[in-house]
Image (cartoon, rainbow, N blue to C red; front, side, top):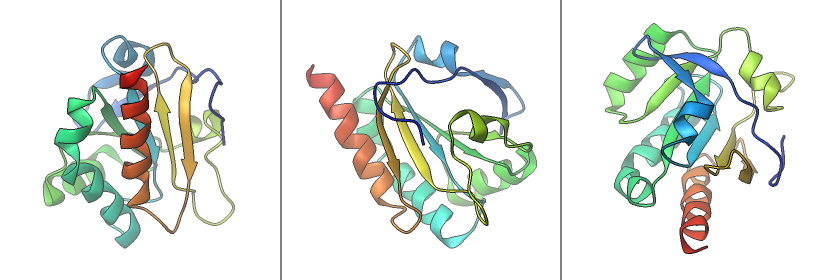
Length: 150
């Protein structure tokens, strides 16, 4: 896992809408909450995504932009988003390239890791917990609040 203070690696990937997302472009407008999760529509991943959805207004009010990343296809992401009414972007990383950049790889199942990245491209917070999916949004909100007060 990358640590706070490290430069976030730039990357481009296909979104659930079929467009291209580039991290450096997104950071020009807001801090980014970049979260890696194992698989669409599984219990822990659904709980995590719905937690980000349920706190969407708080995240937006703090200027945060949420981006989820898994190896699922764009079509799988579209269905997952529609089923749970997710208001944020999901990126497809089928070859694990972005996961490797962010040291978010595992042996059996990919880890659940969240990074809060400031507009300067520096990682402000990193959190890794496979078993506490809802805590990822709490950590993200706390980090965004800290960034807003500085």
